[in-house]
Image 1 (cartoon, one colour):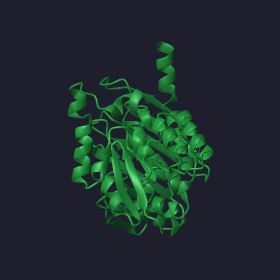
Image 2: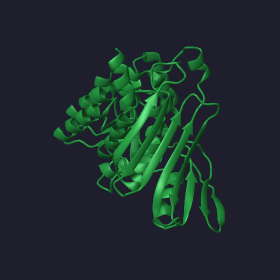
Image 3: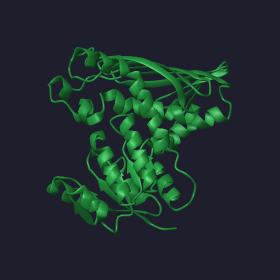
Image 4: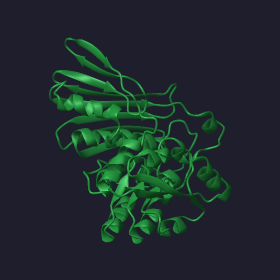
Length: 331
């Protein structure tokens, strides 16, 4: 087994706990370099996390002979750029979600990595989290029988930062691809893809109700999976509280779980309800990172690849298509 030496492009908040330490704690994995445009912040991150090298140039990190694979933890607007550079250097890529600004960019990334014979993985890490894999286990063990449909309700309060007009990049479409829907709902839609297979048909409506920022702040969607399961989703980011719940309904019961919140799984059947406590890892991306390291060493396959992630981007694009068409017609 070879130790995979990682370099991180963009050592921001997501890398502090969710992902960065996972590269150091996964077996046969080592974090050897980080990059951030601000030299002081890059050096500070490297010092605090005991990383031997730091850069202010992504190109320099990618070309470092001691970096075997690259993790791109920047906003989506630069995912394609850095993926293409890493692919040209012949280095495997692990990119944050959502995979890119839109489906077209995702395809360009896939084509570039295929042409250069390098693997491309995407940080839909809930595909490897033990807490959510319990949902998959329940389904595989026929806990609720044949699945009929799944419904999602996800709503969130506007932050004080947003209300004061200091908009985060996550609600700036030119940087993130859209609003909070692209950042948060992507996790839910991707995990449903993992449970039930690709979504075959999707339709939706998106609009802006709060007027705080330009991006959509509410999305309603319906979809049908190739497996025959139906689904509905309602995402609102101008609500009075934060809540994220999914219910999978079968002919013998249902499973209620949260994609993003740490709460018990609830199994409902005719005989009653049962709460199943789940434990989240300290570094939530570490289990997925381990599957990537294993695959790079020729052991098994990671569950989150570019080929699965592009499906989620395609569905999100379809669910908000009407909003972009309306804005285009008014411009």
